[in-house]
Image (cartoon, rainbow, N blue to C red; front, side, top):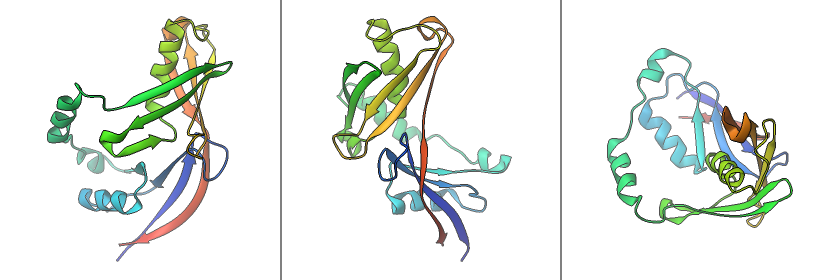
Length: 176
């Protein structure tokens, strides 16, 4: 049985036990695909990241076509709801995806850029190049996170970069 070091970090926050918790395995060498899936289920976090250190590991990646077809069928239904209000810094938001087993997401990185674009389009925030937009999320559920979106080019014409802080919470070794 080998040991695999990992860390649990809270992202999009400067405070432990806030933001969005996720696990990071800095070296997933030697872990089979099915084992990584079992580890992710065992840790039961919204995300588990496995760093793959060689081309063979990257080549093992695959697209779950059955899962993709299922998601396409569900697109006619409300699969994710984002509720927000403008703030002087950007937005205060909440995201719900109960059909995907997520009652409420404490920090949704994939929503921060589109939210910034929507708010620029409707003139709720500045679309000037260099603007930094902040989205506060997770406060109601006790896991406050702050995401940011940096606007590149007028109205994001050169891109919108999304990010946030990362706060280490735990470091461990999993014996499998």
